[in-house]
Length: 295
Image 1 (cartoon, rainbow, N blue to C red):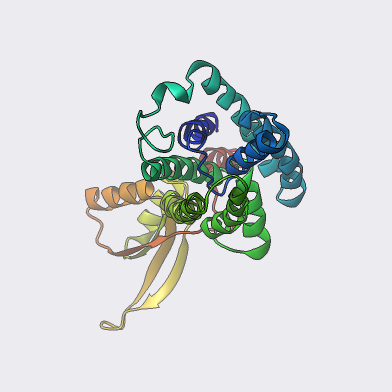
Image 2 (image 1 turned 60 degrees about the horizontal axis):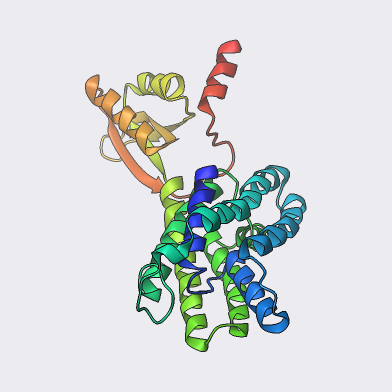
């Protein structure tokens, strides 16, 4: 979680703050609020302070609307974003890395390159945090609420919540900058979906073999996964047999194939990708194995 938030802080501070590019994030909304306060009241509010305040409010919503675990984890991730950005502001200010001669202040020298770098870094951090039931805070909380109650994909939820925030940029940015921000928000949703699907991919493996009992024991005892047995009838031979079905990670599937090949087990195997798993799928296999041994 700490590494994910450090990546997020770098993405925001080095690729959003210099150009004032407003992507649909709470960080982007904070830049808008900071700009409005400077224009109307002549007071420059540090972006890190605004982020801290908004996240504190949203964390209350996360705790009550999404769940205790998500809320507690997001308390940690959200509240360290502001301090991490303050550290970057103090010791590694972006002014030291600005490309000279660019029309808009930019680390990469081009607003589109800044956009691409920001989206890739943020999407990677978001996907990792979502996979452990946490988030970067801010917009992710709103996206998670949309995901939970309206049942949209998490990437689409990020895009919807982000687009609403992005439109606030009209207060401080010209039209073309807002359009760039909306494009970035849409791409952010697509990349989050891609990374999330990649991280969550499982293998649905179906095996027909006379030695199904040997394979079953290996899956249960060594891979510590469950499986289901079906009685099937061969369409060509009309012989009855047993089909074994299981869900495995890519690494576990590789181990299973190695075991079958090493032991010369005759089997007919098909495997397909599964992007989402709900219900009894458990990541903590070590705990399950310990409980089974105790029994």
